[in-house]
Each structure stands twice: as structure tokens, then as C-alpha cells.
Image (tube, rainbow, N blue to C red; front, top):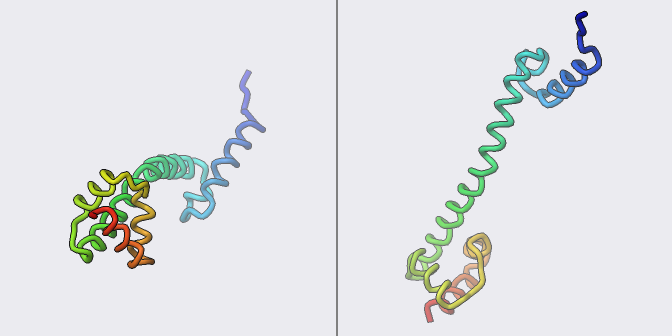
Length: 114
């Protein structure tokens, strides 16, 4: 005897179509297309959560390097000095200081290189 799935299938379809709302054309209305697009979107979301961390670290490094060069040193020399001095400041905070408070950043550079 054939069983069509009824309630279970409808619930699964609704879940996929809800995730696909906002997609273009049949990708948000047709279950078959929506399944493919939602699966791909979830794969990209997983991958890009990892990539986001790398991207931001590169941005922080660039900002710290630019500010360090204004203060007469380089990124690698500065980070080595901060590590040797045991200053507990992460790259995110340091990059934020470099952008928002140049005087504080300069003070940290002087303390690290002293």
C-alpha cells in the first residue's frame, strides 16, 4: 500500500520554503528549486562564518600596521615588542585604538618599544 506522507511532507516543505523566503523567482516558491538554493545558502553560511574570522584579522593587521608606521615602526616589530613586554591587548582592541584614539595607540607603542 502506498503512503503519500501528507502531514510530514507538508511540514518539511514549509520549513524549506520558509528558509527560502526572499529568494528570487521560483527559488522561493517551488519546493524543488528551494531545496537546492537553501542547501547551497547553508553551505555558504557555514563556510563564511569561518572566513569572516580570517577577514577581520587581516583588516586589524592592516590597520595596526598603518598606525604603527605613522609611529615609526612596523607591525611585526610592534607585535613582537608587545608580546615580549607581556602587554595583554588583542589585535581587535589595538586596531580600534589605532582608528579612534591615536594618542592612546602612540602611548602603547612607546610603552612596548621602551
